[in-house]
Image (cartoon, rainbow, N blue to C red; front, side):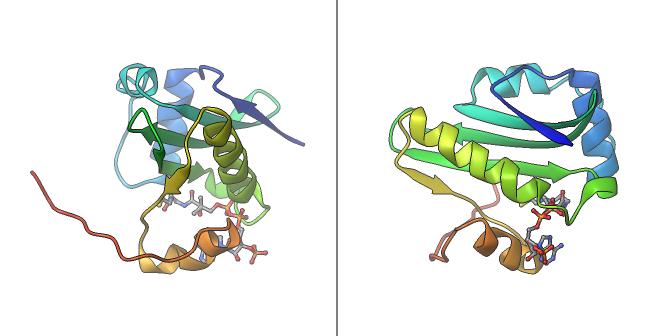
Length: 129
Ligand SMILES: CC(C)(COP(=O)(O)OP(=O)(O)OC[C@H]1O[C@@H](n2cnc3c(N)ncnc32)[C@H](O)[C@@H]1OP(=O)(O)O)[C@@H](O)C(=O)NCCC(=O)NCCS
């Protein structure tokens, strides 16, 4: 059974390990305390004591929030964990006062975000570094 925790500070080493397993490149977890200190909310997924999912919500302090870093461990994908993480994050962002939740993603993830309830809009992205 997977348990979902909202705004509960995770073990940052475990978060780094989850990110390393799910994304390209190592993550030692050390940057996350500063990131989450600025977040509107975040949600973690746990199978027993093991961290298997994470999503972060940044915001502008007002109506707009931005979903980032949706991550599910490869061992538990396609079991609805990502969907539940995003739904919980959206509910928590709404409770926190946000009115709009934005996300961007690569084309192969369109079906996932549509399943999560997002609709397409035009958006822009400017590389700064
Ligand atoms: C994207 C990710 C979070 C999805 O997590 P997940 O738990 O496997 O997703 P779910 O099981 O909740 O998927 C729900 C639905 O979304 C769609 N979906 C999920 N992953 C998909 C994929 N890789 N390709 C196409 N559709 C996908 C499917 O319709 C799925 O329903 P189905 O399994 O009944 O067909 C996960 O694959 C991941 O961590 N990927 C690596 C990191 C990443 O790229 N994150 C996105 C950042 S924008």
